Length: 152
Image (cartoon, rainbow, N blue to C red; front, side, top):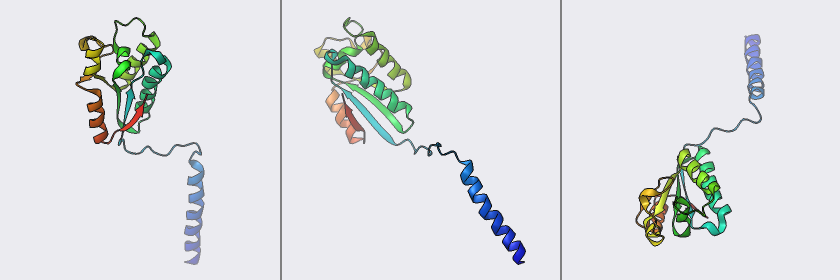
C-alpha cells in the first residue's frame, strides 16, 4: 500500500513540472472579455497632418487589439475636413488612414455642426461616416456610456 501511494505521489509530482515546462514562456495570457470602449476625439485639422493621421492609425490599433467592444473616431471642428473629398489639401496618407480605420471596424462619427460650418455635404463624406447633430453632445453621450476618451 505504501509502495502504491508512493508511486502515485511520485507520478503526480513529476507531472506538474512537465506541464509547466510545456507552456511557452512567451505565451500571452488569455485576453479578457471585450468590455472596454474608446472614443478617439479628433479636433486637429490639416495644420498637423501627423496627428490627424495618428488618430486614425491608433484607433485601428485599438480596434485590432481585441480588448475593446467598441472604438469610435469622432470628428468635430477642423478635423472634419479630413473626410471631405473635395478638399485637395488633404494628403492621401490621411485619406488612406481613414479608410483603413473604417475597414477595421472603427465607427467614424462626424459632427453635423462642423459639417455646416465648413459647408461640407454629409452625403459625400469619404469614407462614409455616421453624422450626429453635435460632436460635443455625442462625446458627452459616449462618456456617459462609459467610453474612455483619447484626444487628438
